[in-house]
Length: 256
Figure 1 (cartoon, rainbow, N blue to C red):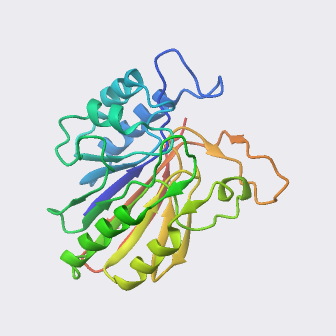
Figure 2 (cartoon, rainbow, N blue to C red; figure 1 turned 90 degrees about the horizontal axis):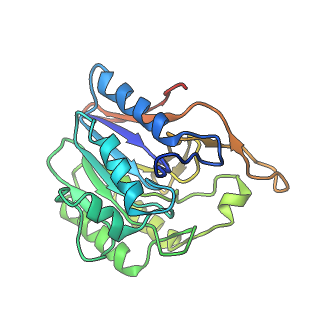
């Protein structure tokens, strides 16, 4: 099974460019074309948040139009730039999405690799949060199938990245999240976005990974005094390949 991961698309309404220079919609279209052309083609695509730049209905309509060209199923979770209600309304035919303004959390059961999406967002908050209600739901899902290899996806990475300006945004509940993860050995990978760079680390008995953005990357600002700027490195995506015994992650560039 091949799971493609795209993240931090930051789609804006037509005629707008991120920071006045980045054509996010063009880059995402090119990424969709690349995924469709891969051989073998991915079985599914997961989109790990910041799907749009401002969470506006017209942005989601544009995103929906672009993702509609994918030749495989897609599964979405919100990021801190998204608005749950507008997102779920635009993707109303995605039956896995919960309704009524609830946390956007779900488990996809019918693939060789179980997929669990978590919602780490809170309105008007840039950092992550996994409160008691979300964590109880998560542990209950893990307990249902303790022997099923599982890929967990969540917008905010649960580890410190070394990019101090991003780490300073915080992640409430991350310690309790880590304790749950450490108790459930079936978790093959936790994959995230938010950082606009690819990185990985061992974390509570599994591997935690962040994928590059399909729009733009952040400067690798590892010094505390270094400003967090835009880097015009190529857009990217990830492929998580499950062969029945282990999960291998590849990071790929789309090109401009």
